Amino acid sequence: PATRVGEAAPADAGDRTLVVGRTGLDALPHLNPLDSGWVIQGEINNLMYEPLIRWGREDWAPAPGLALEWEHSTDGRVWTYRMDPEAVWSDGVPVTARDAAFTLDLLRTDPVLNGRHGGLVDNFTDVEAVDDHTLVIRVAEPGAVMHHLNNTPIVPAHVWSELDDPAGYRGEPGLPTSGLFSLAEYRPGERITLVANPDHPRGRPAYDRLVMRNHETTEAAVQALLRGEIDLVDGLNPQQADALRVTPGVTVSVQPGRHWDAIGFNTGARTRDGRPIGDGHPALRDPVVRRALHHVVDRDRLVEIVHAGHAEPGVSIVSPVFPRHFWDPGPETVTADPDLANRMLDEAGYHRVGPDGPRIDPDSGRPLSFRLLYHSDRPVYADIRDFLVEWAADIGVELRPEALSSAPLNERTAAGTYDIAFGGWNYGPDPDEDFAYHTCARLPEEPRPTDLTFSWYCDEEFDALYERQRRETDPEARAELVRRMQRHLYLDAPQIVLAYDHTMEAHSAGWGGFGMLPASGGSITRQQADYGYALAAPVPGGTAVGEGRGTGLGTAVGIAAPVLLLAVAARAVHRRRTTH
Image 1 (tube, one colour):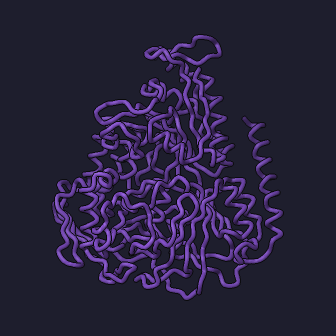
Image 2 (cartoon, helix red, strand yellow):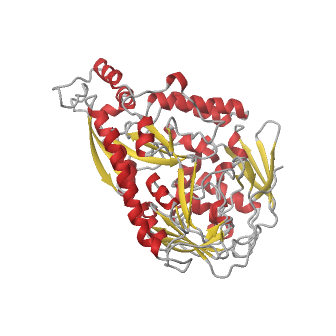
Image 3 (cartoon, helix red, strand yellow):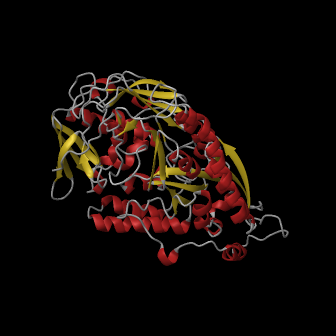
């Protein structure tokens, strides 16, 4: 049996609104809670829908959600979940085991939704609501994921069963929810407005509305914070965080994070039966080319100069904040060694035509000239881009940068019409869902775009390791398999994880109480939980920044701070030029 954690205290704060500035809302395709792959979608899901089991604040250990406790048979093939008798949908209808059974069966039978959740539910042989408060799931093979069910939202059967196409739901307001908030407004690319559910069993939040507002860049969101138009912003770069530290009325949080940045290679976009998709460069199917490029990346330099020390050098998709599963390559660490990279390419037959031109792929006859897509709305990628272009040129590889905003860049990677692309990800507490993006099962059955794969990677040896970790119920034995999967990806290099950047967020001093995950020091936003917003509250008498919505006082800082931001940024550029 587990115990409740992270209860939100009820409050009577009147009509208060928390406004969050975000980048990337314009890249969201929809707000269907059962077809979510983007971190902001998951963040919204956790605010509106209680999962059966959620992640605990202390160490990400499984904690009660709609299920207060759970147990399994000796052979691990029958799992029983006891539902919270106080849980209720926002329309007053009780939440029951029948809602959970309906949701999980929907994920098993709907082809679109199964594409997202098949790795979890395809192992189910039967899902049964024994009564209103007892859910029984029978599985073909024992598996560790049954302890948390991947934080899957549960939807109301009495409403969703009436939808003609559950997979086609895009985020229309009005559907009942079980979480702390309900959807009041969704303007794609502009803003999302949630309203607090007043009768939630955990207590209503200390404010009435939560608004997420889109900004083209993080700098635009910072300026909105300084004008008092928003209360919270995330995704800061080191220069912005340093500037905001000395801004009256602003609180800055810098913590280790679970987010990583990487460049991913198009390893051969194709269907499961091998039919080609897109127009990726054929040379990147060769691990030798990818490994050679791996050997020109100086992660330490990127951390020092681009991240100003606010990051850790990247290894694999598991962040060091998850010590049980994190893999340290030790003596196998790939170091920046362009001489070795040149020898690797020479020996593989990728010869230079002239002293300055790119090498030639011996199979296709095409030069090693690759399109490098990067997000125009993330300035840090432009800095990394400059280093990568120069480093690759040292080994006879040409990188041709193309700046795109998030939405078209994501469309290009989903369609396989790219060679190399920047990307980022927030790794979850359990490895199953994240590593699934590297499996052959995530390739589409037909030649069409998909966002279900990382780098279009498919490898039988990796798939075998993945299946073994899914069936392993001993935590340490499973952790060893997860470390082996990381080693495999690190050495085969379908992507190069550059850095685990620190979580840098800032909020108006007129707000406080934001619940971090983990509680000892972690992120406020982009959690796989609702603690950040659930525990937030206006600070009585708190001194806020800007004049915008009346959250506080003072306008002088809104004039002075941009100058400070520019000054810090100028110092960073000078430093980069003198150390590069």
